[in-house]
Image (cartoon, rainbow, N blue to C red; front, top):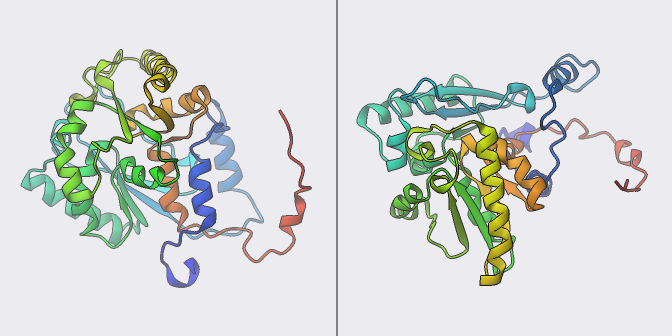
Length: 306
């Protein structure tokens, strides 16, 4: 269907991959030489079936402070290409308000049209969770799937949990996210005020006081230690007051390095921008083993124990 129609096709496999992607362990996490190995294996390997190119378009912020480090995903870490394009004067502060100037809106529309028509992007996303406010605008101007924030996945995740279980949403600034509640509810049908969402903002965590409005934060080692400590403390205390967390959504792109440590420490599924991107692009994947009859029998049905 993918090959014939050229449309994204989701199925039981893509659904299973999505949920498993939120579980540890990512084998290349903290590995120093994985990228060279991957480029060699997948970029130059012989005898592999050629995959149809898949390209993800990422709309990026225009940070006021040039010292702010980006959190772009390395191209070699996924089997699809990624194109980044910053929108002039689309600042962190502007997205935190959920607004656009006329100039920003014009350039945003031109950028997503360029991504779809000239670059052949099969899906479009953003590099800031607060871009969820632009979801409807971007969606209505392109003909490919659009997911401007991992918050898009929250309602789907809730349906997989029991009624008393909740989702922990980790964001740069809890207040800023709640300030956009009306806009998100009206245009995106996402209500952060739903009692099944528990929000943990970076404003009260070490090194994250300026993350929400300016995108600035302290060294990642300090930030990660503080976040892991706070989450562990909350997960230990909350059950006594009837709060049972069954999944975590890390909606902040700059906190992506914390996702894998959170999976390992909490044992909970942690969804983020990467698992969200993988899910949408996976609907374009052409399986290398499609049509090969013998490959399922290579597995001896045994499960190795650690």
